[in-house]
Length: 194
Length: 194
DNA sequence: AATAAAAGTTAATCTAGATTAACTTTATTT
DNA sequence: AAATAAAGTTAATCTAGATTAACTTTTATT
Image: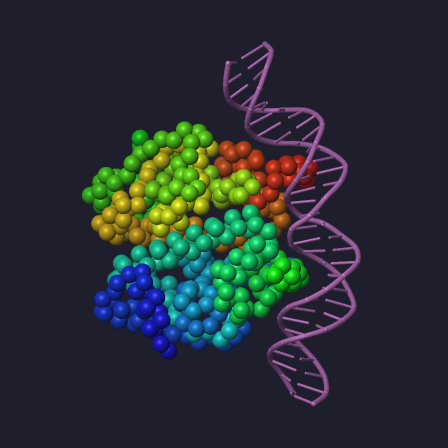
C-alpha cells in the first residue's frame, strides 16, 4: 500500500527529516478492511488510531434500544478511532465500521507512545489535529441546539459534499440526529424550494 | 495571586524541572475579572487561553435571534477560551463571560508558541488536555441525540454537582439545550419521583 | 431475468419540548 | 425596609420532529 497520502498529510503540520519519516513508517501497519467489517467494537479496547488512505467509515454508538447514533464519518485523509478508549485503554463506547472497503494506516498505542518519545514533533502534530477536531465538535453541539434539522442538513451538504454523495441517506439522518423519514421530507422540501 | 493550583494541575500531566517551571511562570499573566465581565467577545480575536484559579465562566454563542446557547461552564482547575479563534487568530464564534468574579492565568498566543518551542513537553500537556476535552465533547453529542432532557439533566447533575449548585438554572437549561420552563418542569418531576 | 433484501418515500397520527403568559420567590439596589 | 429587578414556577396551547405503516425504488443475490 502507498504511504504517500499519509506523508503528504503529515507535512502539512510538521517537517520531518528523512530518518524521522523512516522511523515513523517502521512503526505503522497497513491494513485493509472489507465493506461492513468492524474496525472497533463497542466494549472492546481500542488498540489503534487509524489514518484512512482510501474508503469510508462510520463511528457510532448503539443505544440500549438497539438504535445507531452516528458520531462521525471518516474518509481519505482523516482519522478514525475511539479516542477515549484509545487514550485510556478502557472499553470503547463506540463502534467503527467500514461503509466502503477501506485501506488504513494503524498506530498501536505502544508504537505511538514510543514514537512520541523519539519524535517529539509528533506531539505537536497530534495536538494540532485534536485541537481542530475539538473545535469542530463544539461548533456541532451549538449547531444542533441553535438550528433546525433542515438548516443542519444544508450545512452538512455544503461542508461534506463528498460524504453526502457516498453515504446512504439513513446514515446521514442518524448523524444529523433525525429519522430517515424526516430527512426524506426535508429533502423533498429543499427540492421544491428551488 | 497564587500559582500553586496551576503548577499542581500541570504536574498531573508532565514533570517540569524548576527552571522550566520558572520559565513557564514568567510567560503567564494573572488577571482578575469581575462578575458579568467578558473575557472574550464574539467577533473579537481571542488573544489568550485562560486557566481558572478561582471563579466560574460560561462560554456561549449568541444566535441571530439574540438567544444564548451555552457550550460549556468552566470552574477552578479548568480552561476557558475560544480555542478555534485562538489557534487560527480569527474572529471568535463564542463569548466567554464571568458568572462569578474570577481569577485567571492567561497565556497569549505568542507566549504559548514561544513556550512550546522552549519546553516541548508542553505540547504533550496540551495534547492530552485537548484529547480529553474532545472525547467529552463527542460523548455529549451522542447524549444529546440518544437521551431525553430529563436523563441529560440527571447526568449533568451527577457529573458536575458543583456547577449545578453554583450556576443559575436558566443557564443550565441553555447548556442542556432546553428552555428554563421545561427544566423547571423536569426538576419538579424528579422531586416527585423520590 | 426473477427474487429478495435494502434503501428511500409519503402520509396520518402522536409526543417531547417550545412558546406564551401570569404568577411567585429570591436577590439587588436605593 | 421598600422598591425593583432577576430568577424560577405553573399551566394552556402549539409545533418540530418521531412513530407507524403502507408503498416504491434501488441494489444485491440466485
